[in-house]
Amino acid sequence: MDLGTTVIGLICIVICAIPFVLTIRGKKKKEKQLLVSLKDLAKQQNCEITEYDICGFYAIGIDKAKNFVFFVFKKKDLGKQQFVDLSKIKSCKIANIGKSTSKNGKIIERLNLNFSPIDDNQPNTVLEFYNVDVNYQINGELESIKKWNKLINNILKTSK
Image (cartoon, rainbow, N blue to C red):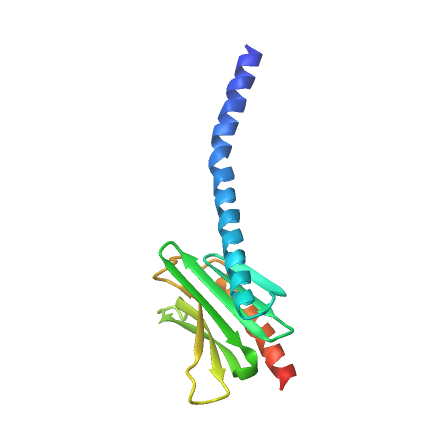
């Protein structure tokens, strides 16, 4: 009787654990694909990723030696790859786009990192960290964009 109960209990535990294991495996596989795409984009510019972050559907990385920032976004059918040469940039700012609520709060609809070029005739480069139309829930993007904004602005200050 005790052996049968133990076996049934173990089977139930395994069945309950399988979805968690599969979810973690899928997330790790997606992160690995994003990192490979990020490194491939860097190689195309003869750069090497020295620091990176992967958050949700995007990966961002930097080559500190050559002052390039790389960004890869992938979600099902949507995909985007961008790079920014920081030697041609004068400023980097966070654009927190959203709606104000009645309780003095703000609903974030988009989080962008905007790069303003030194040459005013060139367009701004925008890296989209979060869009409510693509991902309904914000999950670490705000912290990530603040970190990268600070890192990039430090590099811009030291390179001038």
